[in-house]
Amino acid sequence: MSSLITSLNLLVTMIYRRAPGVTWGRMPVFAWSQVAVAIMSMIWLPEIQTGMVMGLLDRVIPTNFFNPHGGYALAWESLFWLFGHPEVYIVMLPAWGVWLEITSVMSRKTLFAKKYVITALGFLAVLSSMVWAHHMFTSIRNSEMIPFSFFTESVSIPTGVMFLSALGTMWNGRIRFNTPMWYVLASMFNFTIGGLTGFFLADVPANLALHNTFFVVAHFHFTFLGGMIFAWLGALYYWFPKITGKMYNERWGKLGALLVFVFFNATFLQMFLVGLHGMNRWVAQYPAYLANQNLWISVSAFLLGIGFIIAFWNMAISWVKGVTAAENPWDAKTLEWITSSPPPVENFSEIPVVADGFYRYGAADPELPLFEAETLKALARRQKRHKEAAAGKDER
Image (cartoon, rainbow, N blue to C red; front, top):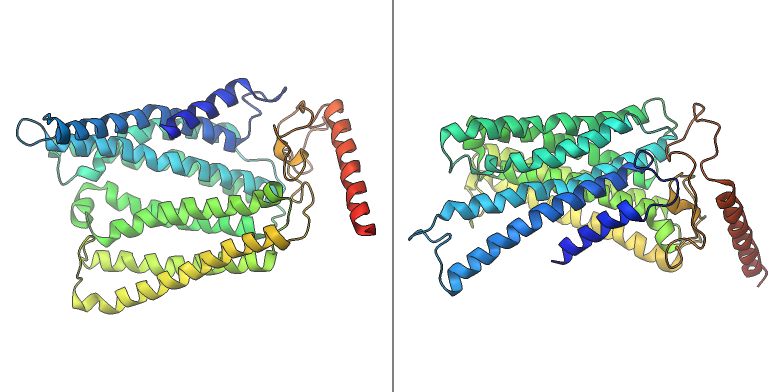
């Protein structure tokens, strides 16, 4: 229920509370990803909640929705995956939004193919509801497999648009390889592996052979952990100066990113191999001939945990003892970077008025100002107060 209310809150906010001048066409891609996520959440969260209530009634009354004696047990599997696969995109769409926000800023280039990206987000939101039964190829009739296999493989088209946009944005850009960018590049690499291995699971014969093996575990973690969590860490480091007003330690940030990337791949690439050798998930014992691979998977997983500890330790220490960050250390164009760090209540002391889009980098940028004159004057006044306050601290 809390997720449903939050989704409604986000959607209504983006419809009715945009700053003056922020048209739908000017809205950042990350905000567009949140629009898609909010709509999907409002559709599919009630669906899984209904299924859980039906299961509860089977236990309490009892009714016979999913009971084999009078009900249909596979109905629960369908209801679960009907929610479960859109849920994958509910968490991945913001990650793709993070990719494109950070690559545009760190490459100092206008976002490539923004309109196509927004269209692709819409297609992904729709296609996500048409692929759930590829999790059930071992349970459904042969005639039902073909359309779900087709739609599952079709997901690669709008997903490819995200990659092409990120690559096109970075092409010939003046890329700054800082910690947020490291995490985004790592996320793109990991999700590429997750996406390519997804083709095997979308193919019916391969799926039937690989179902319920560690190949599926590795694929899932390359998309969720490698794709989404890496992007999430990049977002945390990107917005860390704005959230806290402090700058993180770049050296420790890159060390954490490197360790997480290396040992993530050392952990889960090996799972593809043991899965191809027939190792099932959810079993207490594995074949003796796979002992060495499982040992190195465990060792790599512990080292991966150390990498995560360093990444979060760096943020925690920097929050307490870090140097004061500039209000816009990345020279980004989106609205959050023209307010103070951390932002005041209600985000802005004066409502900004936007005059152009947010991805205006490079020599080809139009000459029009990004913000109206009154917004620029308010920004100059606040920056002057910030400098005076900093000078007073230095004197003391």
